Image 1 (tube, rainbow, N blue to C red):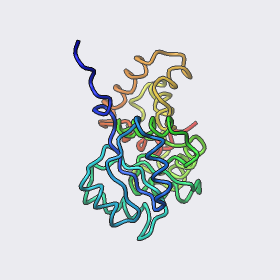
Image 2: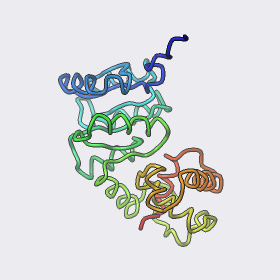
Image 3: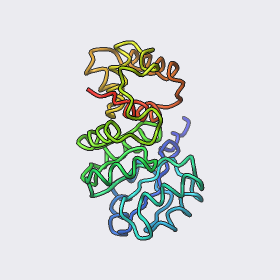
Image 4: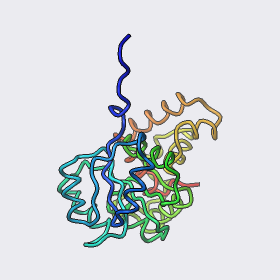
Length: 229
């Protein structure tokens, strides 16, 4: 009988950035067997160095840190580790904190009230290029991009007049709205009364039509164009 493949080989690797060592220890313990923690840091400089060296699948990033905070880390990673995928994990649910780190390049934002299984799932979704938010925070992001834009030339352009959006069918627009709000494929399927495979087909079609590569890019595209209900 062949030996089973070790579970650790399929676990996403994570660098944990938080200035409270006790909190880091708690997260490490709670996520044991769900993700593989390959590094920790408690300030900006050590965080950037650790992320560059460890090259994790996902960085769990606190917002408020000594030396400039999560936004500063994201700014530096843009040049020192441009492929790093960061998920903000913070006690703060202040809209300004949420918007600041998303605009700086984080792939999502969840609060520290999240359960360990939900956090592990969020890590995997970010690893897969999803945008992930705690439910009440998604609205902050959508509203902010709709009202203030993200600096993109397309931001502030009404969705109805967007030539790219006109390529999409009504169903594809529905799926895109749900992607922008952070829903999983299976959740979209349930809400729209279609199969998961149909959702996947719609997403693939939208990516092709908009010449985008990932669901994360799709989410940003949607919120910049006010594609919200």
